[in-house]
Length: 154
Ligand SMILES: [Zn+2]
Image (cartoon, rainbow, N blue to C red; front, side, top):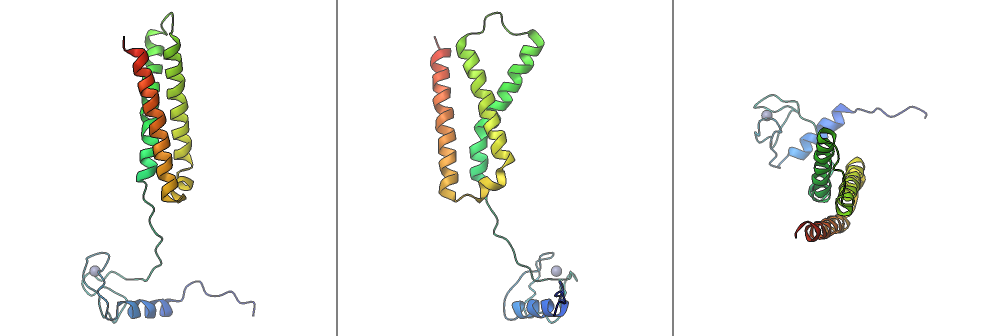
């Protein structure tokens, strides 16, 4: 009563490990040696001490990368344009299209930055929702690109 449970119970853990590898092909994480039917919690090949662990499911980041890729690109473009303006100075008359493009680049980069900042939350979303973000971001950027082209081309 009142005694806190021991956080580590090496004998139980070792027993569970030996139970786990009994009659089961399992590779040593260090050398790849098959530690099936181990009798001690140590790899007989490389002498790595072995433990049984609970693993978390790994979350793929491909949808996150696909979502922030256009924003990273526009961020780089905005940075390059800012440096050029700092070096040669802004042009005397900036057309409205260029102002809107610059505004779009900065906003896009800021949104991508926010998504990167909250990337853990993004990755925990169900996959269909992540794909929805990818589609939404790419549709917006492709539309902006074609609007930009229609103004830039004579
Ligand atoms: Zn080993």
